[in-house]
Length: 131
Image 1 (cartoon, one colour):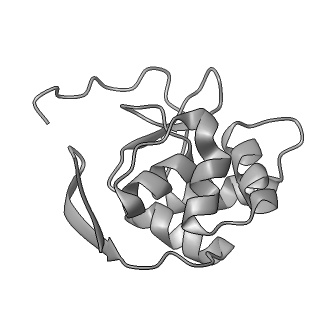
Image 2 (spheres, rainbow, N blue to C red; image 1 turned 45 degrees about the vertical axis):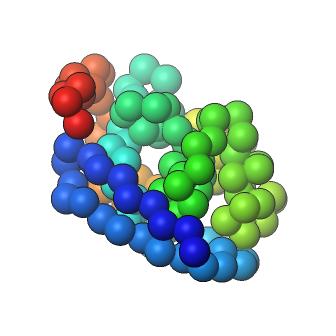
C-alpha cells in the first residue's frame, strides 16, 4: 500500500492512501489537484502554473502527491501513465499549465479554479526553509 504524507506551509498536513491508481478521469484529476499539499503559483512573466518549491507541473505534482514518488517536470507523461491519466489529456493539461499558444482555454480556467489562483504573481514570497 502506497502512502504519501506531504507538508506545505499554506495547508495543514494531509494523508492520502491509494492502493490502485487505475484510470483517472479529468474530473478526478482536478479533485486530486485541489487536494494536493503543494503550493502552486501562476507566474506572471512566464504565465506557467508551477509548484513554488520544486517547479512541478500540475500532473507531476498530483502524481507525487498520490504515489510519494518524485518526478521531474519533463516526466509528465510517465507521471500521467502512473496515475492513469490518458496521454492525450496529459498533453492538453501541460499545454494549458504552460500557457502555450495551442492551449485550451477551458482547461486553463479549470486548473486556475482548482488551485484557487485568481491572478498571476510577479515574485512569489520566499518559502520558509524550515518546512
